[in-house]
Every structure is written in C-alpha cells, then in structure tokens.
Image (cartoon, rainbow, N blue to C red):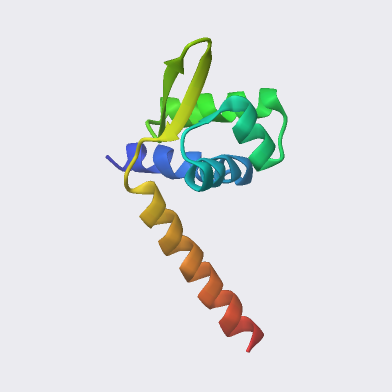
Length: 97
C-alpha cells in the first residue's frame, strides 16, 4: 500500500505535472493543445505528462472524433491540492511575519 501511495504522490511531485493538473482543473475537459497552451509547455511535453497522469489514474481521456480530450478523473485531487496549497501558503505567511 505504501508503495502505491508513494507512486501517487510522485506523480504530483513534478511542477510541470502540477501545471497540467491545474490547467485541467481550471479549464475542465481539454485537448492536449489546450493543456499545453494553458500550462505554458510544449505539445510533446504536455502529451508525455498527460500519459503519466493517465497511467496513474489521475486523469482520463476520451476520443472526440479525431481528437482526444483529457479530464481529471480522480475526485480527490482537487481537495488534496487545495489542502497542500493552503498549508504551504500558511507557512510562507508565518515565515514572512
């Protein structure tokens, strides 16, 4: 179980993947191109990170004609990211006070 949890957290331990997750959270279901643009990364980079997030069951994809659309499929991701961001923000405020 601990190994599976560590793999899950390692997927979210990469700043680029967090930008991809944020883009999907902000935009909802999106194409690779839309994710790449929103995250400020190349199309190839977005595709690679989406693949890893899909393999980790954090995002899912569906075909829409000739394109592929991605969305966050793990319902816990939003709350997890919010909890961690709030904690980091509180520590930053405490250090700068």
